[in-house]
Image (cartoon, rainbow, N blue to C red; front, top):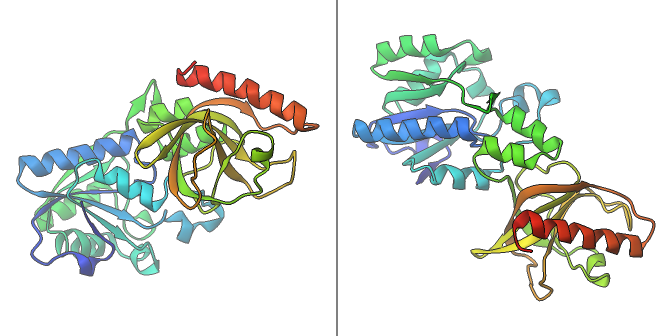
Length: 310
């Protein structure tokens, strides 16, 4: 997949395109429907499929007080987009200049003059241009003027629940990673570098891999989760603990992972992925090491069942 971060990087002789536009801040099932349609339209009409997206949510610039952390980081987003089969991704910096573009300016400068769009795929309720002044009807009018078709896809629902990034974030805030996975179409993950911690877990027989605080991927509710740790193509069963370690010392919120039945792994400075499969219990403060160890052993027993590795 080609990846561009500015209009100037798009080759002037690049093929005509089928473009889908969106934040794609979760690449959930609704986003995947848009991406798949763009790929299909491109193949049908001998076009190149392109994702037009942005480096941040518009709220980060326009409504910072209401801004919420993204479900995905840039590396995760890029990887997931590449897996959809799209030919290229154009990620624009969402700055004041972009935010102040009129709908016509947006279409002419980006879709027509840069991407040579012949088909544009958007979701229901799509808005664009300064202050969201353009809608799907506006886009269709501009499409007739500039020579591209517009395909509007309805929202995707799973079990009567409309798939949205906000809904997924709320589920993660409640620790409901199974329900979130149903809307994502995959288990939620966190990606980051394993750094040196206080090594307290090692002293009680449960060495943990501490993920750096600049990790990608929204951290769910504080608590313990059954999951997997992915490293170099190998998947290890693991217990993930999200939160602060109140039993020993208050530290900034993070996620640490204990790989079951392995004490020989050296993960320091490696980039790994933590996959959340099932919520086990909320965070708790223990009155000493013995009670903590007993609880960890109970957690591990439940995790084995959740992962099917009894």
